[in-house]
Amino acid sequence: MGFQMQSKVRFITIGYIERRKGQDLLIDAIELLSKDIKENAEFILIGDNTSHLAFEIANRIKDFNYIKMIGSVSRDEIHRFLDNSDIMICPSREDPMPTVCAEAMMHKVPCLVSDAIGTAACIKNEYDGLIFKREDVNDLYNKIKWCINNKSKIRKMGEKSFEIYKRYFSQNVFETNLLKYVEEMV
Image (cartoon, rainbow, N blue to C red):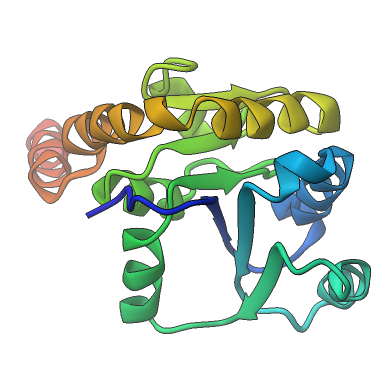
């Protein structure tokens, strides 16, 4: 599961393409990357691509062979994409607790997240994931560049991110917390 040895670092972003989810910020950051950095990266955007923003992004990236916008896919396909990805990018402007991050961690894929999402509270920067300042395109750019320049550290980060999944998001933890909550209510 998780990290696959490949020549390029594969970044994945999953979610409905809309302003709140911040995919436009991601494209802004990618455009800042130098040619040699871009040659060592692949970016995959998965999610409903029928919004106005999705059409704008599709137009912006039409000539970029290192960015693919896939559209909506099945749950099984999401798991296959995660199994073949190195980093999950969640560039949201706001998102209390995106499930895609927990899913990525379940697949031992570390997350690069905005500090505007709840998952950021679980991550130790450059240890089990990466955090960038909300809406700061330069910070996101620098974190993407860090991933490409530190490819050898990504696998270890993925292993550590799996620990976050087990500690906070696994079914056992959910059931235990739910039981505690029900007992407190009774």
